[in-house]
Image (cartoon, rainbow, N blue to C red):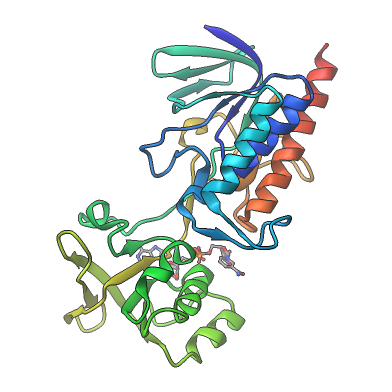
Length: 313
Ligand code: NAP
């Protein structure tokens, strides 16, 4: 059992910024950064699944997502942050110091910063795990380039789906927007932009039932929910854009969360309902979900944490 002043769970822009600030405040944080093999808990967070990041200030020529996260990590290490490349398996926030388990190893901490992020929702089809990265994608920015001149589809009817569909018309010859209802959830401006784009064709009241292809996607079997008719869309790319899910299962029953699972923080702070536990980044933000806002809230969490610890002594 090892004890740390501050333990940071998660290593996306929020967790690593918290690590930089906590380390520079001499708190020697331990960052439990996640598991490389996992799609939801990979070290570096969602930016590890991205290619070029063009909107992170300070990089006028853009930077690749994984390179950006490596830089964050190096900066935190430079000031003494330690890293554990594992996944937290359980937490006990009812004891002091707090207890965090990583399989059979226990860690204790005076304060915890939760920055476990969020992940893309999937359709739940059997073929998804096989075809993810082989025609099936959850990130238009990452993978759009691979579909130049090809016919693709986007699933969903919210802002994400319409944003992705519009973006993908830069590459694809045709984008079919597959939506399960006959009206969109997306904002009016996004609807107008997407539906007036001649490359985007909406397919209403339709769900994807099966993905066709062994090693790479060759089509999608779709069903019209009104007529019951099925057909195969001859697409080589399918982008699932049906929302995100925060990684908060570990904290259920302990930390206050919204019905959607996002952690609730006190206004204008990173304080959760448990004193000494702070939350930052996408795990508590379903509005902005940007690397820069996550980083900003990571900074807030480290400062809140430092001040809280100071008041304990
Ligand atoms: P969302 O608003 O929850 O929309 C999810 C969409 O996916 C809905 O149209 C939903 O259909 C559909 N869907 C959900 N589960 C499905 C399933 N199993 N099969 C088929 N379709 C399914 O999620 P989002 O688009 O990711 O947006 C999340 C939040 O981020 C929103 O507040 C949004 O405004 C915001 N956002 C903003 C921007 C922007 O302003 N630039 C960009 C992206 C996201 P139903 O409509 O039938 O429920």
